[in-house]
Image 1 (cartoon, rainbow, N blue to C red):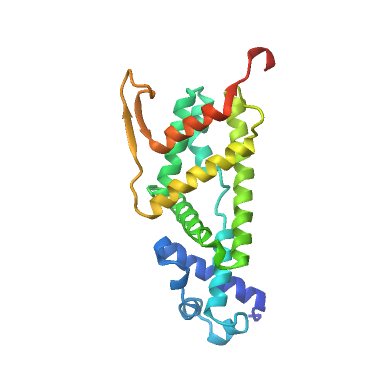
Image 2: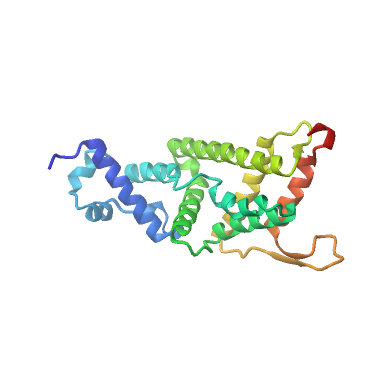
Length: 239
């Protein structure tokens, strides 16, 4: 068997470290992934690591950057999957908003049953926790910004699809990216609350209330407010 190159060994040890983070969950923290444990899991000697990193902190920095850059799916896949059937069936916009928002809440609370979705949710939450500490290392701040920009681009496309489907346009002078940025700040804020163990508020609106009747997450109502503030229907003659 050919010997691994230094780059191959580096990739292996980062991959093993990310696997350990995903197994242990967001509460483990990057500081609890010890290089000796990673080497033991990878069946490698100490020398293999210290030819690549000066010390454990050096390794943990690269592991944090790799974890933030890890994408198990397109950023908008989970919410697109929650609403595509509704959109194709011509469901009311409120139903789409509620389903999309609830998919985000379930992801933030790690309340998903499918193993792949659960792993994706775990990855999202770990990356989010690391991004809140982006000032720790310049490389982590760069990776965090790159991940943010990728997410905004993906959600720009998704929101554009929804706007086309429901005949909406952005209010002047706002853009889809302005909406995506507001949604990202809003959604990530609730996700951080979930990391803190704060339950997500639920509101039950009855017939006759100012809010449409039914069960709403607070995030869904917030999304509805953003949609109403950022968007207006396209006039029939302009379609």
